[in-house]
Length: 158
Picture (tube, rainbow, N blue to C red):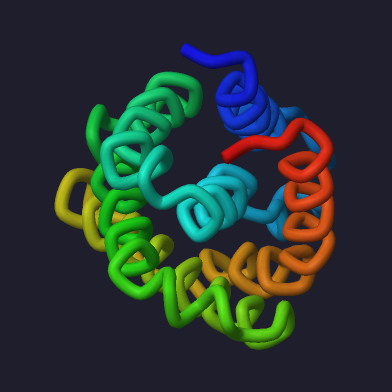
């Protein structure tokens, strides 16, 4: 594994840490989907290196870290990254704010697949509060995009 590719792994691990970091209850409701945001950036930037397989492995790590049924986050992340990877050439040409809207749609897909799987497994019921991370992910996307793009250019990741 090249030294440059280790930056991608580092950012994914940092996103996993941010995903499980303790937050106050009031703020935890709005926690952005850090792993989805980082995977979305790297899938658009390096589609030959970060793809559905990486999303599946990140989902397994999230399942283990969050204590959910094994495969729930894996399937939801894989579906979301597949949709993104199938359209990455078109999405690259969008402005950052247009990409933020697409990220919101991907986040909504991710949360709806998560809800659907958890409803089948544990019979939970839908609440609008499940979709607050979609809004926060959309609003934080421009800064995540800028930070990861700057990191990619600084370390010449290709």
